[in-house]
Amino acid sequence: MILFLLLRFIPFAEIWPRIKLVSPALWFGVLAAFLAGHALAAAKWRWMIGGGPSYLAALKAHFAGLAANLALPGVAGGDIVRAGMVMKGSSRKTALAVGSLADRLIDTSALLLIATGGAIWLGADAGVNRAALIAAAVAVLALSVLGFMFLGPICALVRSLAPAGKARALVDKIATALEEVAARPVTLIGCAA
Image (tube, rainbow, N blue to C red; front, side, top):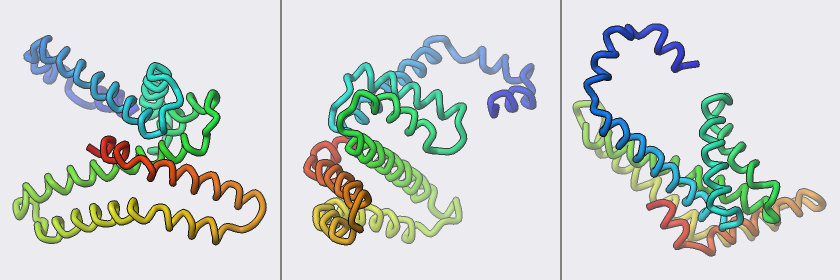
């Protein structure tokens, strides 16, 4: 819809000659980099959820999630489609959901750090307080590291506070999946890198 509106209101006759100036090699190079980046993102997501589906199934689910992001409202639409496509054949549905959430949190944190780095680089030109941005970036990193370091005790505390019955069983599954994620620090660091 946004693309339609852009093409409707942008003077296409003025833009097309400039688009034609870009070499086909550059177009195809950018397309190849785009596809390679998403192929790596699918591998990262598969690694984050602990394997499970084949790489081709994860890649197919990843691209279906991208397509859903174009059509569904909200940020989580693509993540839900992506997880839903591999959930049917998975025996570890909770681990899949928690791994997908961890993948989204890692991606969001990375985007925040990139944006913070850009704002620090622009500094006073953008009207931002450089020291405050650096402090915020350090705080986000510190909270992330502390959260990971204390994930085991946090899971134990959440389990002890869970009400009895079906809710306790669900909380236990989530806590177990979180502990599995925390037990793979190399995976977390690799996915964040």
